[in-house]
Amino acid sequence: MIRALVVILHALTIAAPGFAPKREAALHVQRLAERLEFDPLTLVALVEHESRWNPRAFNPDTWAVGLGQVLLEHFPECVPAEPFSPMDLEPCSRIRARLEDWRYNLTWTAVAFRGWRAYCLYHVGTGEARYYLQGYQGFDAKRHATCGHVRTRSGWRALPIPKLTRRVLARRSEFERQVTR
Image 1: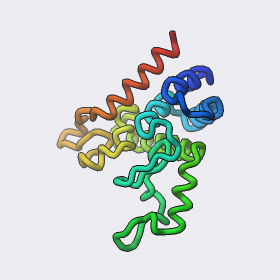
Image 2: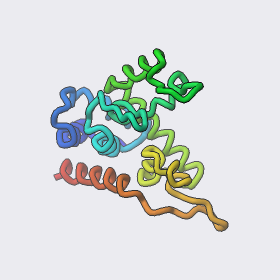
Image 3: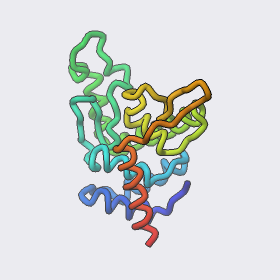
């Protein structure tokens, strides 16, 4: 799905009034969306939900960093051999600093979108945002599900969509309504 730069910029203005490089970010999101084939308004809504467009956002409970709240555990350098803070590792500190760069973080988030969508398409037969967002947001791990589905004897059964996923999708719809007026 390709969106005009002005549409993405308008959504960013609504979602992130204090985020300074809006035009640059809108262009970056547009290019990522074209190359990785995802809806940019979904990314804008997710980032608003995850970090309120704060590039330095950090969640000490999950070790999630930056705009898209990318988990440090995705990087081998940040997985300690013994149970202690991954931030005790120097290479992990460098990765955290890099993830606080908004461009790098948005790119990582977009690549994760593509990965989750492909994973869901392959496993449950759908690449809809309401399913791949559940994986991205960690609900699959909590509910022992695959893309918001559980396996039954007769195939896959969709679970109810979590409130936080519904909130991101509703915000995405708000952006679309506001920018198409």
